[in-house]
Image (cartoon, rainbow, N blue to C red; front, top):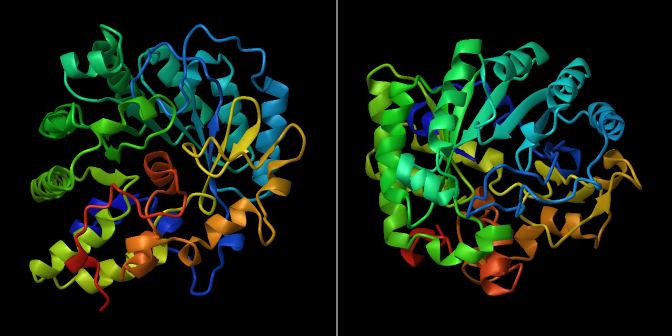
Length: 388
């Protein structure tokens, strides 16, 4: 995640301690991951970019039971995982999510939820608030016509907006999760207008990753030229919000060259904070798959992140997460933690390798067939990445 509001504006955020507090020499093996739990594969929508290929008609026989989930959550707490993100599918298709969120909070975990928002009414918002949920990230991909087509459900937009309002009324921190594609990048201004209209506290703009159904729309990845213009627009609109006292947290996600691009822009603008921003980017270390992020699926399978679903590394029904996550030399997780040594092409020569960490490996493998090749979604040119 590239914190636009934190880096470009300089606004401190509650999540800074997770991103920018690593001590010098802190090894990946010592860093405890944020865990994304795909609590179910069921979903009431059919989104074109769904990395888990979720559907409403699937059997739920292989989902972790409530008891198994509590054992899993208890292990995460003992392992000192800082955050558990309940995702799906649509996590609120499970009736026990408020109960499990409350249990996670009681164990010292920060509980957050990623949802399409359509199942959140006043009652559900209160349950999530009472459970101690810290944040609700709600997926929305544009204005009504664009969003409903993207999610293949007429009326989804209206229900999502209703869910956002219910969260706000209940006092839950709520944010928008927007995936950028050729079909909807022109909706970015609409999203910023919506942020202001609905008093939305956080917005994450995701670059498309080709996993699950997202593999079927790989041609929807933006060109480098349009990506740069879109990122610039996000930066400009964020600055405009903050200039007017609307301090929404804004981030871009899943294209780690956004960080170097932001730094280079600040250099051109003669920003006195450019060096500080570069230091912060180096501290975060770029792509965190297999390091600062982990994914556990509805059936207990553990992956390095939500998108790398062709690389399972274990199953919590067979071995606790705390026993799976630490790795040995030669194992897949260890390779991800040493990817600086393994990436090839432009990534290997890039002066921002310590900032970006070779960008997104799942997208690279999907687009090129080579896990260690350069990410085709990198939009920095050769002059920008040249050796200092």
